[in-house]
Image (cartoon, protein in one colour):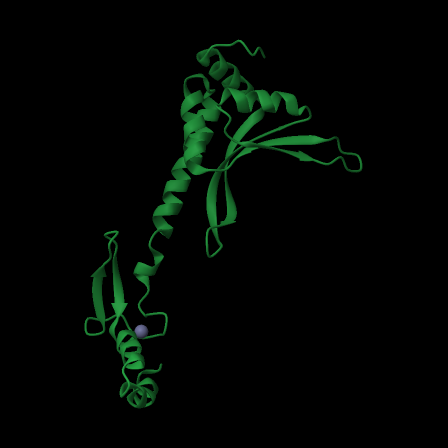
Length: 185
Ligand SMILES: [Zn+2]
């Protein structure tokens, strides 16, 4: 591959290389705070010679990382190109789309469709909880909806709020022992 290629020629070269050697997949990964399992789309290309991966990375605007697997018994040194960020995976697929093979287009579409379905079924899971973290029911009398500065509306447990306000009121501490016992579980 030549360094003097135009933007378009770079994308064509990258797409042809990807058609032969690359793949798009959906993987399980632990991310975020707190860390939890989620699904991430990923572009992967493995090669013995990392130089061609460096070239690919340059041609897709420097996106992605290259890792080198150490040589082990009976295995050659292998290098892996990976791109694991959702927006960046979409960006690279979009960049190369015109020149991707039918098979690679189908694969990428499937991954992004599956991801959407996964996200839809896992989004706002807390919305479906019927009880607050301390176990009080989210029913009409015990729930207050509040919208924060970011415009996100959340349910608040009134039993918990009563508990927290009593804690700060001097006379409340005595009541608290009794009410906490009554409201617990
Ligand atoms: Zn509560």
